[in-house]
Each structure stands twice: as C-alpha cells, then as structure tokens.
Amino acid sequence: MALQITDEQVASFQRDGVVMLQSMFDPTWIELLKAGLAEHRKAPSPRARIWDRDEQDRTMFWDSMAWQGVPQYQQFVFESPAAEIAGRMLGSQQINFYFDAVFVRSPGSQFETPWHQDEPYWSVSGHDTCTVWMPLEPVKAKNALAFVPGSHLGGVVFDQYDFGTLNPDGKTDVDRSDFAAIAEADIPDISSNPEAFGVVSWDMEPGDCVVFNSRILHGGSGQLPEDVGLSVFTSKWLGDDVHIAFREQGMDPDFSEIMKEHGLAPGDRPATDLLPQVWP
Image 1 (cartoon, helix red, strand yellow):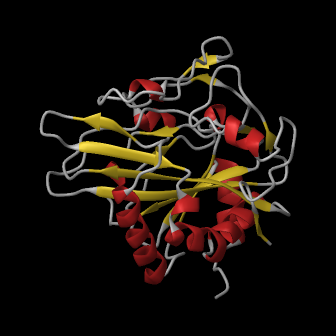
Image 2 (tube, rainbow, N blue to C red):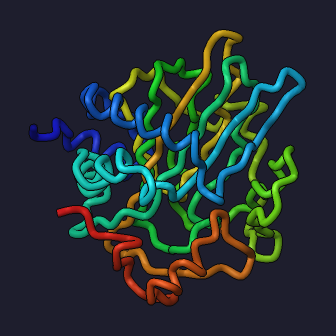
C-alpha cells in the first residue's frame, strides 16, 4: 500500500523536527510488535534495565538493540513502512537501520522522561537521523512523549541528562555519559513553562507514529493514570549524511565495541548486517 504522506507533513518535519502521522501502521504490525515484546520481556538483552521503580513496585523497563534476537522485530525492520517513512521525512537517498528501543511503563507509573536530545548519546553523527515512536496502546497527549519544535536546528549540544543514573536495581556495566566538557548550554527548565517553549504532544492510537529528528529536545512522557500502562516500540533510522562517531564523553547505549567487531570505524558510513540498508 502506498504511504499517504503529504508534502506538508514532510515540510513540518523539516521545519519542526517532529511530526505525528496517523494510521501509518495497520493492526497486523501492532499485533506483531506486541507478540515480539512479549517474547522479548521473557529474555531481555544484556543492555536491559529498569529506569524507575517506585514504592508500589511500578516500573519503567527499557531495552535496546534486541532486534536480532526477536524475529517479530526483524520482520518489522525489513518489511514494515517504517524505513520508507524515515526516507520520505529525511529526504535521503539511502536509509539504514540503527537500532530498536522499547519503553514499558507499568499502569500508574509516574516516571517522566528527562528532557534530552538523542544524537549526543549515539555512536553515530549526522543531521539526517530520525526515530519512529509507536505506542502499542492508546495514549493521551499529556502522557505521551513531548517535543520542543525547532530545537533540532542550530547545532547546539546541551548538557545532557546522564541516563546511567536511572538504575534503581543497581545493575552493573551500565553505560554512563558526561557532557559537561562539551556542552554549549544547559537544558532549560522546559517542564516549568511548556507553553513558553511551544511544547507539542498528541493523543495517539496504535498505528499512529511520531517521527522526530535525533537532535530535537524531547521528554516529559509519563504520569499515567492508575489503570493505564504504556508500551512503546521505537526504531532509529540513519540517512545520507550520517557516519560512525565514537564519543569521548560516553555513549548510551554504547555500540562502539560491536561496531568495531563488524569492521566499522569512525567516519565510516553505516553498513554491514549490524546497520543494514533497508530503503530503498
């Protein structure tokens, strides 16, 4: 089925760094991802960890780069519309898959995602990158991931949040990052006055997705009602100007060693079966 993406939506993504696309994935893809997530939760990758555990034992589970061990994720990466969506939004001639990440909040979880950019944590560098963010259950705008439109422009590297501190279970070998030495600015207090920053988020149904540039400031999801949980599948995509980059301040998740094992070095284009070209 041809993707129904308009020139206006592409222009919005390029201008704002984020766009919400309705009904991009039919129910077959959502059920496939749910089945994959159920299997994934039974056997998480070594990178998995809990980002939050409160006094009621409500949690926020995270894992990444699990796709090679989860057949349903593999099928989604290579056969779903996600790669073409990324290519159309980025205007790139070539789209490589980077990695998957899942975020699973227990019903009633109050954990909010700290405001941050993605690319400074990554083992790649480039403007032509995006995430396709997909809720597997309905989510209200006030509980969904939120964004500061236009904050992907200008090339500012903010003093990012150290996600390595989100480790209530004391898991060892958690990736850590320290951006203070390279930061050009502190992340502003967006949550205290979201209207001043033009923050946007959307009511979403399964099948909808948000596509966002990896340099946009985003965060704030969470604060769920007591009877509502949220599972989100995300896929990360790399376009024309992206190259491998290992960062001295740390990477989270740090894929540098596995990239080296696949023969990838700083400055290389994404390639090999680790970062496969999926589109066209």
